[in-house]
Image (cartoon, rainbow over all chains, first blue to last red; front, side):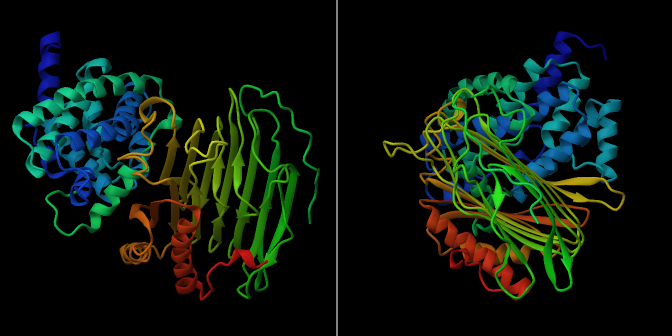
Length: 226
Length: 304
């Protein structure tokens, strides 16, 4: 398949489509804890949580991992770091579950030697297989530039979470679209910030998000696995 | 036992660009087991870091050391280096005499680099007093720990919202508390078990003006953390510590790290409104570990 601007755009669209079956519908990444405590209950309060999650965790962990992979940092090292820095168990498991699905889908539709190497490392227990890295390996192998891959990845994550919020809170479909529109600025700011971060910043998370992700393990009634 | 000691030198108020050059304070400590007791087999300190005379808090043989910063606080471009090794079978309790205070560090930052190594069967309890960053302070704490799979690490930490003359919170520039824990493998390589990276920038970037709110401090002011790495860490322990934290006036979470080389870590994170409540919460957890693992009494550091 020749790589053209159109082929790259279509590939990126497929990879970041909310219909991509990675199981994102099953993960709230901690917002269900806020739901239980009554702190997230409507469009505005969900938007506040989403902005914090995007500005902190998605920026300092996922997006930075993707940038570092594009810049040639060893995949094994990044994979090990993600496993070590995603301290809440459910979030770590969410990352590797969705990563595993992405590796599988990727090898069916966008196979590459790099992707096969990552899959083999995961299959033999040498790597955990995290979602942002699986995405970055595929996107990189397709020659999708980082400045296109990064906002697409972040917006896909934000879209899945918003769809989950629409079901769980619940929010109206139009309210969900307003949340997504409002998240454009946050995604753009995250993309800008990721450029300026250093290896010391990798994995910095905010205590509140993290505690809520940990508390989710003990939540009685829950719709989500994280 | 001290091989070198100098009084805290005169401090320059002109801050260089970064924490480089020779350390403002340095402490090296190696503890080994001799007979039924742990003793320091090497101790070196210079500049604005030293230790008080070692002591034994009980008859378990655990050695207690108290770190002291005679200068009273960290300033811009100050570098402090701490190197601790607990050899096979030895046990060390390392605390501080008072809160770690970071004063203004205009255009620069103060830094503490700590490296810790635990041998087979070694045990370290690290329980420093709280951290207080003053207005316009920047601080980096870089802690690198290598544990043997059959060793035991318990470390706690409390970060306050800082202090300013107007009594407004979060007036400091930046706090970076990065802790890396590796587990030594059979062939000498050390796999990364946990990377705890707390970064608070109350006045800049995504956090500007938002640190107190939802997603960050959740309306609370103080942050407490407990890290436990020990072969006995399991889900049951996580559940027990969660139950111990629950009655406290704090928002707390407990989770287990991934397992590396057969070793698992436990992380407890708590947000509260004052140092005392977090001390009680973390104290209840460490008391539980001390009692069930070693038959020791709770730590009561104020009795000496």
